Structure formats: structure tokens, C-alpha cells
Length: 236
Image 1 (tube, one colour):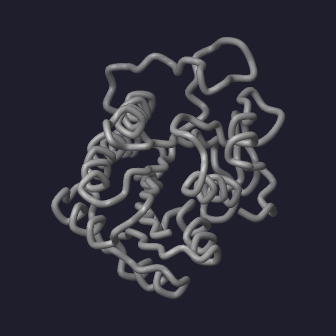
Image 2 (cartoon, rainbow, N blue to C red):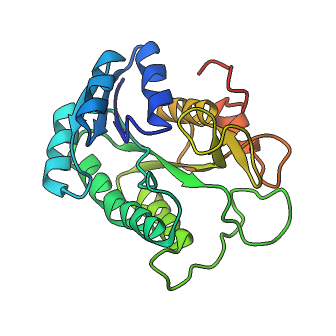
């Protein structure tokens, strides 16, 4: 398959892109960095240097790649988790996702896999299932929930798009802020990437919790429908 990975050189992308290439897929990965552009080439992907906020350039990049699937792994948290960082990331999830969805519809692709979060469920029964409600959004530019709700709406409810949303736990491992699992739902970054690789090829539209075993969020659907497990050593 031809797979377009938005955020191909980010924390998840650096695990995901080599997996996809090793599986025989033709991969295009986006970056805004010349250094990361060279990394994408070295691992066998075609780099696309593009800013997700430039809707015209993004549409051209996606259309030119002729993807069967678009994978959305974009975040904007390199600076940290202060309110201004969270506000910037919310903007990416809202406006950046809108641009990526529009670019996908302009191409031949009709399947999109997108990164979301599994730590935003409202208090209730445990373990949380994908059908459980999220926390209520707040009128705050730095509100994480608002950005997630809009991202999921765009991916799941856009006509003509088969959307799969992966609600990751807090990432840990290489290239992340955590070397080991912390509090809340967690998932090792390579296992998160493997879920995206599997979702690119299989699974029905909808939401999948991608989290470690034994916590307050259930990963049963991802295990059953994607054939995924949180063991980072499992092959995709």
C-alpha cells in the first residue's frame, strides 16, 4: 500500500515509518525539518517538507503521494506542556486536522488513522470502554479535551472518510518524555506505532483504546479487531 504519514519523523512516526517500510509499504512522511527529511530518506521513506497549516501545500503533498491510507500522528508539544504549548497543540488538532482531512479527500485515499488520547474519560465505570463519554470541554485555549473532540469529530464524521481513531495512553520509551510507564493509562511508543500500522491495513471505522494491560482503560477492542497487543516486541 501507499501510506502517507503526517508527522512521520515525530515520536510515534520514528517507530512507525520503519515498520511500514519493512512491511513493504511505500511511505511518504511529513516533516518541517531538513535534518528529519534526511532521516526519512535513510529509513526508506519519501519525505514531504510541508507545514500542516499551509492547506494548499499540504493538499499538493498528499495528492502527489497518491496514498491509499493517511495516518495522522501530528502533535505540537516539543516545547513542553505549559498552557501556551497546550494551546498550540489544540490549534494543530483542530485546524491542522481539518487541513489534513481536506487534503485526504482531495486525494485517492479514503481511510485515515489518527492519534487521540485515552486519558480524557469522564469519571465512571472501570475499565473505560471506547463508548464511554469524555470529560466535558472547557472554554480555555489550552483545554486538551476540546482539541481531541474536534479531531475525533473530523476523522469519524466526515462524509466519504473511513476514520479510525487510536486513543493512545501516555507514551513512554524512546523519543518521549518518559522512560518508563507513569500514572494513568500508558503505552510504549513502539506498541502505539504498531497499532497504527495494523489500523492502516485492517479494522472497522471507529475508536480504539491503545493502552497497556491492567489499567483503568480497556484495550479489548484493539486486541480483538486489530490483532494488537501492548507487548512492544510483537511484530506488526
